[in-house]
View 1 (cartoon, rainbow, N blue to C red):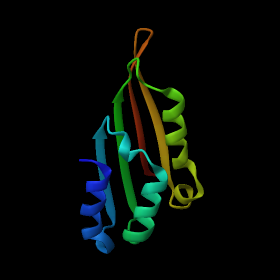
View 2: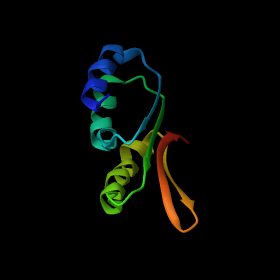
View 3: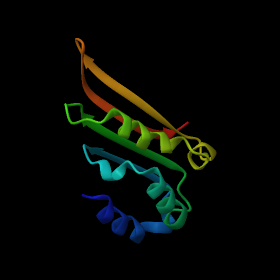
View 4: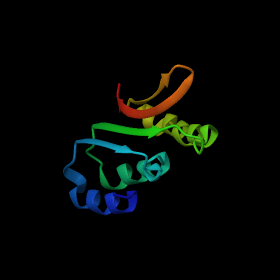
Length: 107
């Protein structure tokens, strides 16, 4: 499911949602902190706990700089005020990075 479709779905639940857990694999449309901020601010005012996880295989097409720029947006004041912290884990096999996992969760 692309983020556009998810937005339509979540807007229908809107104001009553207090906890949201979402996990996805290799779907970069969800790694947009500004888009999440807008969605949460406008449609999820009661949201207290936000659990977000993105897993991705690291291959020759993986752009570390672009990925870092995207996930760094989750360190803005919006996220800090809600005490939702980000975490980055990298799975290494031997000397080769195999998988990267980025998450946001309550402190």
